[in-house]
Length: 521
Image (cartoon, rainbow, N blue to C red; front, top):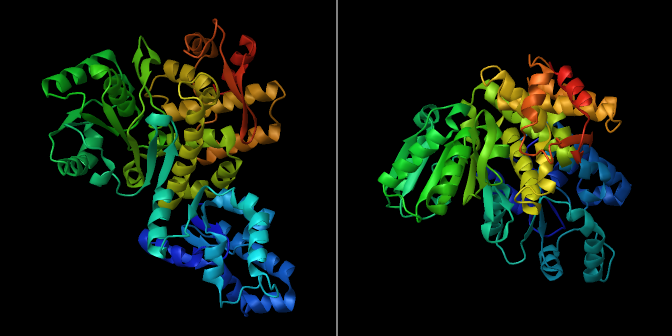
């Protein structure tokens, strides 16, 4: 999946805008109506006249199914009534990011005047017909991922606006709101970095060798001092000693409250640099520039920052929202295969939380994701960020709904802490935690065997473990009791109740917790 689909009423500019978008994105453009006419061997108006609207809609659904399910990376313009078919809506949800183009009725009448429009033929009151059709279709248009009013825009202006919608995922938090930018070559673009008195780029040596120079060049365009702070790679870097080292370097380098920190790297760098930015001078601005799939879909979004203490992950931290998140898909090309798989565990988690179409997309496109097909990865990142942004907007500080994001993490943190990072990476621990959560949900009658099997199969296709942690259940449980999400000494679990649905705050008897952990040993 990974198509960009333009839906909307006739005369809103889908074909013109789609052509321009495809050119800017370097993608193939397909006008669904033209493809239907080609396959039918006659113009759309003739199909309506000879066979009627029902026959046209069946052919339309068939053509869109072929385009959406069998091809990748298209910019697709659909017919105005395509959303009327339930199968088409489901296919769009599972295989495309959809932008609904709108326009005022008056503008639509002006743009369609003098052109054959089968849905308007035979109606003396064209304005009344347009208004009635728009009211009828509006509930389905409302299911688009984004909406763009083209009434007062040229095709070029509309294409530019659509491109911004395609790249940006808003995180709505009032005065702390920001955007997650998803696209290619974002790190090297000065436009994405806010003005500051000076800049500090925090990264590890491996990531720094690949990407620090382009970030430094982009920041240098601002005409302010730029410095790079290297920290060691790995979870063990998230400690008070490394935090103190960063604070000291920033102080000695003259970083003031008008400065900006760029966290360039995976979740470890994002957590450490974000925590230091949150606490230095009571808070300086930070840009999250995640270079791993796991960080792009999860760790960099939402403002959670932390360091580890006494062997307990993320136990000391702060909420500190970034100015912007730059999810540059090109950085995933250099990601080790194991790290890519770890990121896919978080994408599966997000799909289970509340995005069944995303889960179906993963089932259809997992091999392409593992093969790093850029358009597929961009779609997975975007959909995951949309889901997480929605959860964060409802519960910024994890007082309620945001706890759902811990699916697989209570089990996973226990496994990860006992196994050690050399044996078990975070994403692998989350995958095992999801399997354990599914087992517990099955035992409680909350999840069917078939649904649990689909989850396990999907994780296996991503190359993630379903068992084999090698961890003694009792040891993992002992660590889990220290989990910061525990309430009154009792662990709180997130358990799946279906594909795209979970229950939060479930208390489990310790015997069942041990059984679930034994399933992944």
